Length: 303
Image 1 (cartoon, one colour):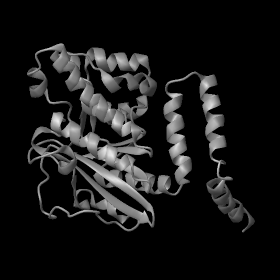
Image 2 (tube, one colour):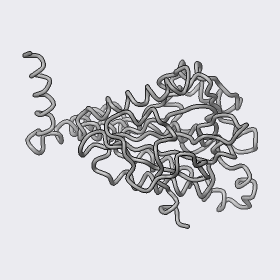
Image 3 (cartoon, one colour):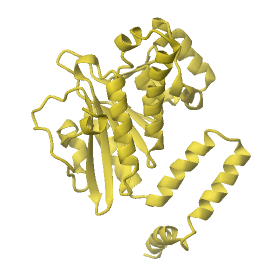
Image 4 (cartoon, one colour):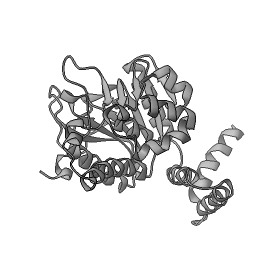
């Protein structure tokens, strides 16, 4: 079965707290409420208000700590590409599915070592790791903010995928690490984002020593933006962030995300020039969105 067909639409019983924002609905047939998620990438959408939707992507591999393999990588790319074309999209939440009984909670436990162990040539190895990069790139190419909802282990490729998101919130019991050198390979692809998040010294510590860090340390380092006590609080924060982002100017948020990514790869002077251009673009239609949102602000000041 092809990746687009297997990127299933499922109901929000996976994360019920998120369904309280706006009018929650699912845009395709749903899984039964008591169904056990299988190994797949699931997507769902909710309408916050007419013409404004938020999507949830759930990477599920319940028997293997949500590790990502070639099939799931292709499904994740397909799901991201589908969402990127939705003009009503305001935010995306990326999360790991529930794990099997007796397994620890996990966001994404890394890449499939069994699959990597079977690689026999540089060509095969490059193809495998390039798919991980393509998945991260597809997440980064979604034109609205992507929020990583992290509960549990976030390791290796899972941490790289998390780093490709725009905002990250985690439960206090979550664990972060880059163990690749322990199994004879370097940390690569979107691990290149880590120096910008946590600095070069801390990146060396994670990659050279392959040590795990707890959520409090991850927050202190800047690897995640917020740490909460439990899953209930996790969903409350995600819900709040989604509602806040969705309340901003839709075109302005998309422009801001594009500009942020430009800033990652340019000098300060280039970034300033890109910002001037982005500001000017908001007025190509006479400034319809800025005037609407500024008008609301000015109206509140007069009250």
